[in-house]
Image 1 (cartoon, rainbow over the protein chains, first blue to last red):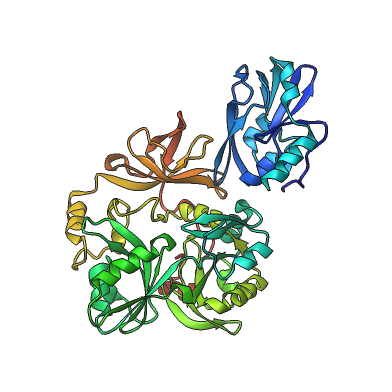
Image 2: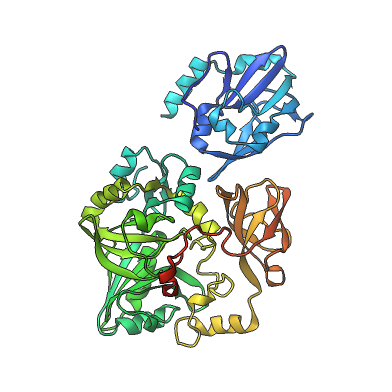
Length: 132
Length: 363
């Protein structure tokens, strides 16, 4: 079930434990291994509407485990192009494959310059080690 | 987690890789492998829980019976040695100070297993009402408690079937314990009360016999499916037993604290009632959410067995019946739910035919 801990080098990270894979002015976003591990088994994904405008650092949806609900924080600003309907039906995919099949939304970046403020994998790992 | 109490099994939990949380002042395992697997182990096979945080009070003496008959809602005279009963410690308003299980060890000697969060309150409550001839002692530190629950639990421990709410002083693999046919999961099973210094050895034996270690998260999802209220959440000093559906634990024909108010509520009918519900739409109900038709969710979670949101909540009596549609306000989003029968699932365990009259069933 649960994936082994990892923080791929090709992703950028938001300190609220979200990742973004940036390609051609678009980003695929999701939550990190650390986030899904802290929550436990994900049982519900409340997605944003397609077409909604996400604002960097603001909540855009929710994921819930058996015990807790957690706001999803947008790592970048942009318009929602697609949400992962497979995860809506089978939220545990987020635990199994947080960076692959467990992606949450795809957005068109409204301010690509924001990418510079995100952490790289090394910076995110350093942040986690501070959290203990 | 500083300043929290730990049970005698704390080291075992860490060794098993448990994630721990604060609960009622204790640092307790919330899950080991994951709540879904643990929940399903209890519904399908056998799970084991550390419930050593529960409090144990001993009430002893020639007037112990009299004290308990006045303080507790159920009829203590229905007990005899080897029998236990679910009962309530009530206040003058018929509110629930604690819900507990009373065991008659011998005539004039009772053991009360109380909620961890209410241990000192329940102890003080009884101590205040103690009279010469009824000695109340908090013996919690002397005991560990291990719940073994699930359709295969008796088989795994090589225990004979026994009616629920009975107990014996016995041994498991040579370790002395009180073996009680009780639990908080809705499955057949036992709760083992063991001396604190032998709790770890008993835990190891139970794991060796193939029980899956389960944390508080599974304990919560299991008891919600079984529609057992949790004190401090579904019931408390400001909720009465009748509205909470606990009238079966109130002997209204005897005198006890708050009985007049409970008789009045029973006669007039409660204004609201605690009911179980299942979500019709994808959403997880949580305690404190409003029910649009009136009332509040008091317990809510995702059911690993039903694979949908489930909960308990108080609704106005006119709609408090199975099949009624209600709407849960999930952080501003209305989500449809249906009130259902108790419990929310069908137990797998079937009593062996020859024991059927004995009343073997879920506790």
